[in-house]
Length: 249
Image (tube, rainbow, N blue to C red):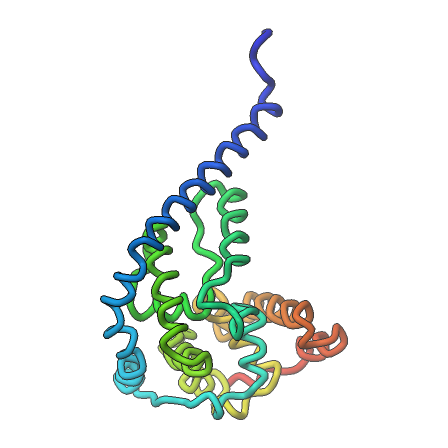
């Protein structure tokens, strides 16, 4: 019938309209957030300043203790940043590249998907916000992450993250996780163990190496691939890591 475009022709128009809707929504929300962000961040400064005490209290409640960054294997830090936040040392608390990538994921999936969060954003979300996946919550997370980056040195933020992140089996923080899975301290982790743990924050139950080694191995391969892409490992080194034993308890 004349005047009616085939479905194949209408689909790109629908996707473009959807993309423009998301872009304009984010732009409007970002403008609103910038307008109110300074005041909001100022009001939340006490909570941001109290983060170290809050994390230490949580560790104590779970029968663990604080681990300084110097006592964590460098291989774990490298693997974690390559996988979760490659621009951690230079970004202002948020990654605009990551946000753009998450918008593309939203378009491909047809729904709002959590993504593009830096380690700093994950930290403030875990400690100060909820898991609700909405644009206002995402903007709130971004404002707090930027404020925290201005407030604390990067090394302290990384230490806070490593001590508060949940890694499965009741293990809060890298010390509890290292002891739970391998019976050793974070400083003693091998590269194979580091790449295994670095893949857990995304979904510790799903990638649990004790209950589903196959899923854990697939996730470890993603971590190794990210390290190769970042230039932290050569392909031959990556293969050696994936062939090395985990040494689980």
